[in-house]
Amino acid sequence: MKAEKLYYLINFSVSFFFSLATVTYGVYAVRNAHLEAYELILIGTAMELSIFVTEVPTGIIADLYTRKGSILIGLLVMSVSIAIVGLFPTFTGIGLGMFCWGIGYSFVSGAQEAWLSDEVGESRANKAFIKGAQWQMTGGVLSIIPSIALAGIKPHLPFFIAAVFYVLLMLFLLVHMSEKGFIRSADNVKRGLYILPEGFWSRLKANHLMLIGIVTSICIAVTMETSMRFMPHVMLNLQDMPNILFLNYFTFGATSGSESSELVWFGIIEGGCYAAALLGTFFVGKLVNTESLRSISRALTFLTLLASFSALVFGTANGFLIALFSYWILIALEESMYPIRIGFVNRGVQSSERATLISIINQGTSFGEMTAGPIMATVSVIKSVSFALIASAGPSALASLLFAKSSFTSKGNED
Image 1 (cartoon, one colour):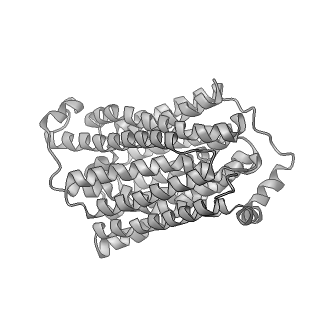
Image 2 (image 1 turned 90 degrees about the horizontal axis):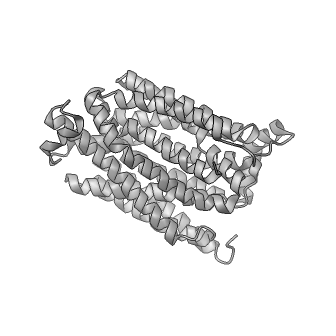
Image 3 (image 1 turned 90 degrees about the vertical axis):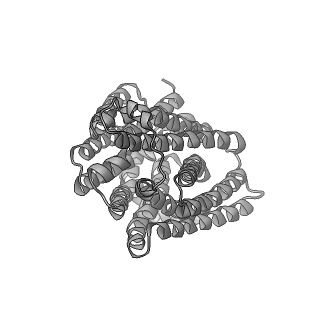
């Protein structure tokens, strides 16, 4: 199988499996595990903490030894972690499962982009990143109805089915995934140790795009983490969520009308996120010239500014439909930005350092989400959830300013 097609398959499958398990996670966490708003965001913090701690070490493993092996390990860990979430519907159980999932994710993130770049080259890979994001959104959309149906039968069933699928994908890649473009350095350990910390700081001094990429990743992460973790609390506590009686047919009558309505509405919420993100990545792929740094910078300036505004609307929404559409737009923007944010920093990067440097960008995201968690949880307790959501919009506005600055400095220096 060609490298791009295999990359699309990985993006589609991982998204399908994770979405299958988590489409109704909000209902599972609030109704079955009885989690409070601050517990929801602290679980997210636990997951991001594990990503933050392991992103760079797993990136170094991928750079020194094998991209393929890193991806396979990640899928296995994801499988185990998702099963833990389904087995233990408590704050501790879900938190442990999400913490482990973050470790598995860190093995895959960076490694799959670095693998593709090695196999097909930077130029083709940068274009494939956008199409890969579209396949990712498609996988999420197609998992919606199966997830609702499975959760309607047993709340934990989607987690167990997803765990099995992760293992099947791992076995498929074990047989069909090649690694011809990866060249292992003869002095692996010495080079790997050079990347951190001395090598990393020297790269920062030489590559201002990497510094901007890290800071903006942190800023965007604060906005997204706050909105995503508080979303179940916001949606389930708005009094005007429509109760459509026929929705219980999606769960085969296994739940009451109100319970099935909540399950399906969360399916609609997630499905709308994926559909909007798919549309967003389509327009980004058509309108943004991925060969031009200036074009990428301008696009990111606009998208981050719009994300800040959407977060403000979501935080102040007093009606279900306003909250729903602003949340859809916010998620669509975040997903649309990711492939071109990778393209923003994936310029002139040496193959032997690529997975590590991309992992550092993802680590910046994890750092932003990890720090946002306890801070916004505290703000929500002292002030309100709405106030925390409004405050989280500020960092994305700052990211917009940084991308705007890079769009001017890149004039006349497109390479």
